[in-house]
Length: 411
Image 1 (cartoon, one colour):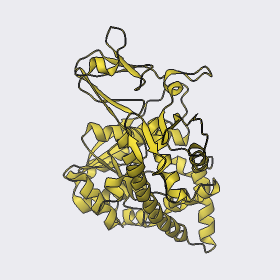
Image 2 (cartoon, one colour):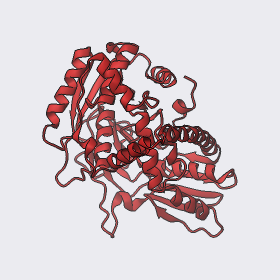
Image 3 (cartoon, one colour):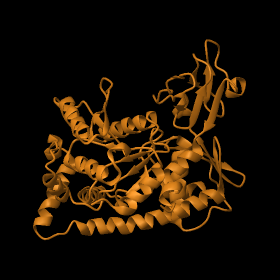
Image 4 (spheres, helix red, strand yellow):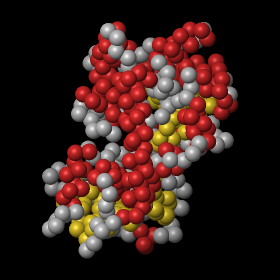
């Protein structure tokens, strides 16, 4: 049931470190844990159970999930999400909180790979949901079997493996019954207020009338191959046409090739310049790409990035108002206190480490849009270099989007 290629890539990336299993206690994740124990041994695994703290009994379910890991000799931790008062707790927010918790835990444990139990059924459901929402073809490539974690900056350098994408949900439960293994049924999985639950029910009806969900999975597989080729070409275009630092300069004379490649490259560069977790929509990028290289272009701000015409192209920089605050009500970024000798990320763009206690980062009107204070007036980085270290994350954000050392490396 485990996909061999995904397992090989996962273990090659992981090296000698354990793999972190995203364990919910549901049938899919319990099956994944048991299969990985049989594959590589309990000592090569660590389970993380995220308690979203969104319903009564969630802590009890988390404790029970932990007992499943304990019974197999797999080290386990329960990660409880803390929600701010009034915070959005919808499914998408819960998903982001889950990945944030998993990635932060992986980093704290020195781990670089998370294994998640997405199945063939999840893939088919994802395709239907994205198609219904008008996704471009890249979205219909569905769930990747092996890529970087889909969150930034918490997911930087952390791979997300999904070795059960070829397995059906019913197949996994049959396996668990044969093993005499228990699992937890999450009531959210049958709550029709959630889109995925409604799509799951509709897909079940279609299957009962003769439709094969595997057809959707095959579509995703073919488009994933095409998407990987597009990423490879976009990365090559970025390497030849863009200079990357605190800002990004694109040489217009070199910016060429098929439009899909140009738009994919620009989408990646926009997210990198903004330090953003998400890229803009494909439609927005297509319009932007046409505008910024047109004659007479005067510049604009979009999705947290300032676009400026340059002598031989265009420059992308972090939008100042997004950091310093704007008159339309967008607040300035809150100051960030630094822990001595522990790297911190500012605005998704800068990795900063302080060698002394008491320092914090504040928004400032300079190239980095950041200054540093420790009981004295804020100073630019040039005045505190040596006490603090700073490196732009632009290039890492580009790699995170395209994952060249994962998706294009031989296992």
